[in-house]
Image (tube, rainbow, N blue to C red; front, side, top):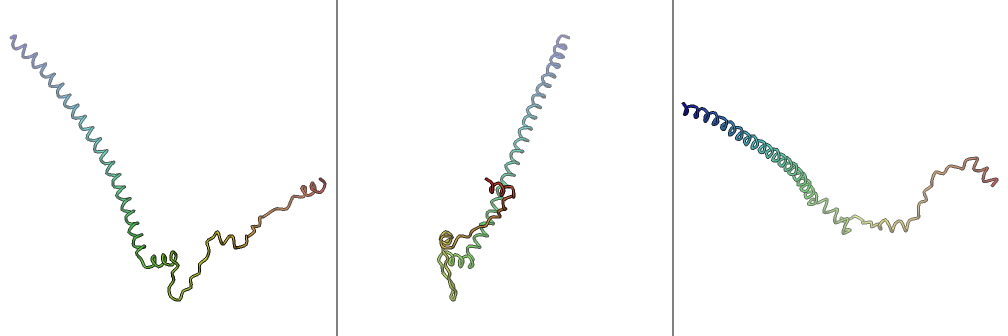
Length: 130
């Protein structure tokens, strides 16, 4: 009988240990789950930032390719030859104007007229007597 009581007490203690071990393992599982969810959220943020960067670089690449095509074009080369080297096509006359600073010195100054209202009557009387 004593052995029976001992085994009954041991079974009760064993069940409580199983409960504590189960709670501990459940807590570890929950903690692991929360960490994994946090890591997934961080990874999604990094992915979205990377996608934004990829889109920005794609637009920049398109702009660079468009600019490159423009620079390689005949019109751009011709414009650069005309503007920087002063070259012209056959039969054209090149007119070179001085820069704006020189033009301002040469050209007469344009007097800007301001809209000035005439003096009020009381001011005229005041000037007349004083």
